Length: 81
Image (tube, rainbow, N blue to C red):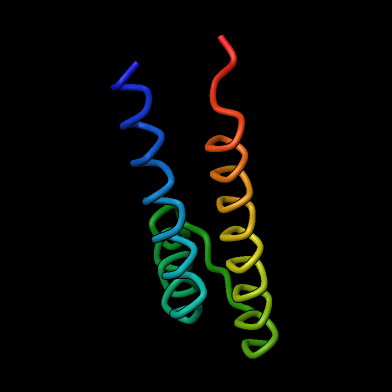
């Protein structure tokens, strides 16, 4: 049971860290995605970079919101089995 709890805490930490990284450095996140796709022989480029950065920030904020909601739910109701 303690391992399950520790894994949950680790996933919360990873999720919030990833969300904050995406929110603070959307340009770097886009660059990492482009590098990944180059390795599998695809080239992707945003048509409108400012719009892509804005959308990445919105997606990151939503991701952080979902992680916080799931964490709150888990703390409030816990496991029921």
